[in-house]
Length: 437
Image (cartoon, rainbow, N blue to C red):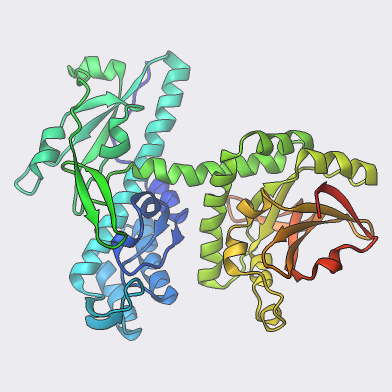
């Protein structure tokens, strides 16, 4: 019999969920949609990366070390005060251009930041545990796994959340897409994971499909009217676990591309274009962290793969790759955006580098450099210039594995990129493998 304990989610799962978040600068919480809130770390009015990084570091420390709210405030307050991010100040709203008196750091805001991020991270970690449990139980005994909504039954609990208390539905029920807790600011609700046998032992019954009522909410920041479940605060009508998992899915698929045979990896990416979006999500978080810190730690991410035609044509030049995945390291990202290239007007736009997985999937042409084992990916970026990305085939380098240990790898890596005149890529040394010029 499969037995599932009722202990809280392991801190490691919450930590990993939080670590996967990138950084997002925003003036107002309504500027970032609900799904993006689950994948990125953002604090309204924290318009400087150093301030946002300090706050994120304090939250990370709280998750890792079990820091109390009082200690969180004590450690973070002097750092924010020293950087001027404290009290009420006049700030310019980037959306409207208006100067507004806004609240920056305060004891109350730090409590909100502490509460929201820890609860969301633990909820995302618990969702992962629930999904892992469901797969294990299905394989071992064929049982279904259910989630039970658990509210804190006191005078602070919202009536709607109290009404959901005890709701038991299959883990894949659409109710959990919009009502997986937390469901609002200060929400203390959680879920309990149960198998069919546990339901019977505890005398629980599966709930009928809930009647989901909705209301319209006007987002004054975006001008859009959004449909929000009644009883759920605007910005909270999503499953934080599923949102975090989508970014993780891109990373997992990217790792598979890196280890699969070249022809299989190339075909896999071409046959499932939705995967490009998942890889883009995962890489985008990595890119944001690299830019925020400005430091290289020897980490590397997959940004795409050779096309089947490119793999096939490379064999004509005795350059058949070990795998088809294209990677980029944090050092290369910083190199692509370095000041020297900007001074010569050769640097690619930062937005282009952040969207490399998407750009690679629609490259204009792929050329083989017969003098070096490299590929040139060519893109349209301006009326009079093209962009080129140089990818070194089977390049030997080092990267950090999941434990942080530096290991030797051989990978197809993006080494450099720049804006070029069209005539610069028409030399005889370059042979067209895919696309057209």
